[in-house]
Image (cartoon, rainbow, N blue to C red; front, side, top):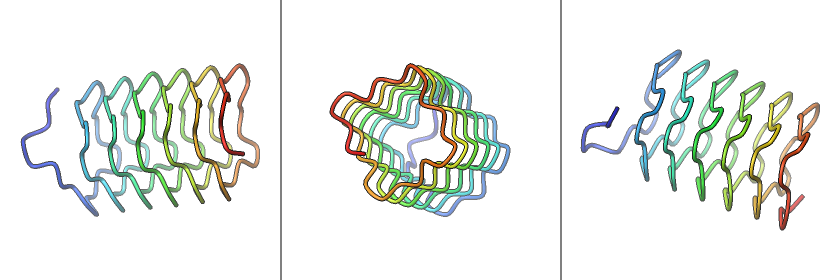
Length: 129
């Protein structure tokens, strides 16, 4: 599923949206509400998700390489097997997030809340914890 040429969805209300497999490369989703959205397998390379709300979102097997997630609320989100290489998660709320088997190489977790996060078998090489 390709998103139309307009790539600025800042502050959009996308609660429970089905964006499975969507191409959202370099899309501005800053401060968007994506609570419980289905982003399974979505392509979010270099997407801007700063301060976005992603409570319980399904992001397993998505590509979030170099995505901006500073200050994002990711409580309980599912990132199993997701590629987050080089993503910026500074000050992100990651309580209860599922990161099993995720690629977290070079991810910046500076001041991120990882309380109760599941990092089993995640690749943390070069990550800033």
